[in-house]
Length: 95
Image 1 (spheres, rainbow, N blue to C red):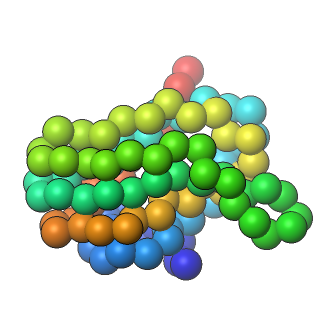
Image 2 (image 1 turned 30 degrees about the vertical axis):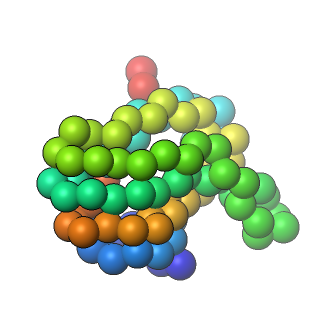
């Protein structure tokens, strides 16, 4: 696993962490690709170091995949299981 790259673009399969989220805060996550990709989301469970899946799904075509998530902890993990083109990640707090 690695932290999400600074350019917010995922180019290969694997697990990418977005740390330092505010627990209890709602976020809008958008994943966008021009090809096909599949990914699921999980949050860390605290000091045990394990992660629990919060949303599974596939991203297809140029349509963005969006999820509104409330952070139960400080780290969100994007688990990319397949991708044919880079995935652009955007995460913003909901006001």
